[in-house]
Image (cartoon, rainbow, N blue to C red):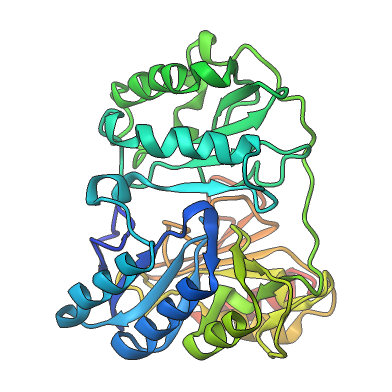
Length: 370
């Protein structure tokens, strides 16, 4: 257990040390994998890692258990199949795209402009990210991002800071110039280091010029189905990914830690029903696989899951970073160095503290109907 909480996320060039080896994060372009790319990731995981692959809430894939001596070989394999940018761009390429994008639409246009401009932007925290949500409905308005791009009309986009209700409407031809002004303001804010570099924590300081226009597109959800498959705890193994690739020409990764595919193989890991009770719990990796984690998450989540009778909204995190979800859930169970803190809804301070997993389970069972 490491008392030092990491303030950055891994990428392909900078894997992060974890309890089970290195974590290699792969960022598919537009969050979509080709058959060849999916097979390559599965092969890297089996050959160089421990066979475990997790999906992040930024629609990335993480290959776990990588050995240091194999890092360069893994990079070469990723580069060969088009899964790498240059190192400078890769570090800042934290981009989520609405999963129903198509070639040539506003989403892909914004993505292309943003990708080209990334190296020219001011230095930003490594976790700083973007969500491109330019569809008829806003599907990823709550995604883990600092800047949201949302449709206004066929030629205009609203740039909205995370945490702000209003944004700034700009023509797509002026998008990068206007975005640069947002980012210059953010990078010069004296408070960003104190808030670990997230826009939502200083959105109340946003200058009026960046928050003048309403977002007109409604929010919506993309339900699970036989083509939109959830994964229990956002985890799959390399062999399962290879099996999926065998049956599909492309795989869309989503920030809900799920996959959109045409042909799903049979697997107990899949959730294709909105009422699947495993959807009730969101967890991070937790201790001991995560060196930042104070507490294990999966064992507690499994025990809570065994008691759930109807769909719930529960988040279990191994530490205060809350990597699996930054949203406020009905019940938030956060690991600390002395046990678990419980937050109900958007509480800023915990309503209860348990010294261990057993105490926490007993309290939840007695005080929160499952």
